[in-house]
Image 1 (tube, helix red, strand yellow):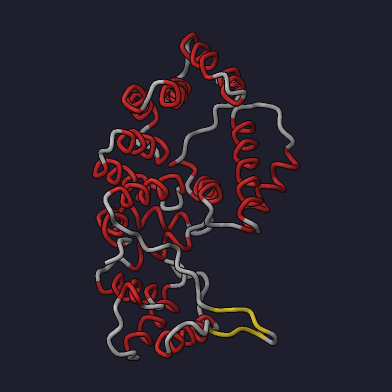
Image 2: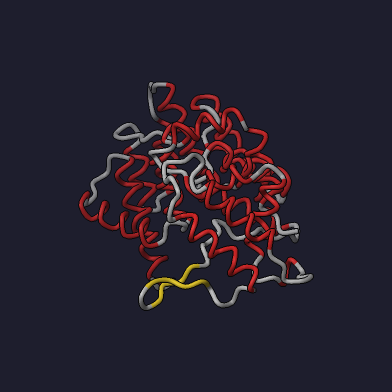
Length: 313
């Protein structure tokens, strides 16, 4: 899918999902069709990740407002931010959830029209009503980014990703905060270096012999893997790491190595961070109950992965 086509598709899907979530009229069949096309064709695009985040862990995401904030959403979608803000401020009696959503919406409007400092109190009020949901934590991080407070921006991105590792907006925030201080993050998720070929598949020829041997071991391990294991792909990934450690390419600099993904997996396993990565790479609605238990028992590990593990040495 061409980049410009992907960008247009992502914008269209985001707009349709916004309309649907706020009770606005939308073509449901087209929304479902375009959403499926985006998520299946570009599963790691930030909009796809956000949709997958909601599907896997809906309790960590903003609830849908339906009719309650429909008039605000309509004005917002039309680009009439002043009207949307006026409607939001004039709303009458609301439930606690609706009040939290109103504060979140006002925060977004104020962010666009006045700036991050003025928006931050509204996001904090939304957290008081709704709890520390991943999108609200990321919005506080966006406020910190606007104030050039890079450590705080990163801290909120880490907290958001700890709650829901699929939340694409927080992942973008994490990359932006790192870039602002001259740091680089490893592109994740790591893509298997397996290429389609006539008659089957082949290992990426750009890899060193050691790298090819490791991915061959991974491919063989997957043939007998239990695809219900938790976290996903653990046994085949451990086999990949084991084969990588047994091989040798001499002294390759990490930053110059075509095998940097393998070096990262090796490092994560040694540092006790591999499970955190595998949950990011393989979380879905089916295994989400197991992930919730793992996250709640290993929050320090999850936070350490997002704070340190994704950095390039």
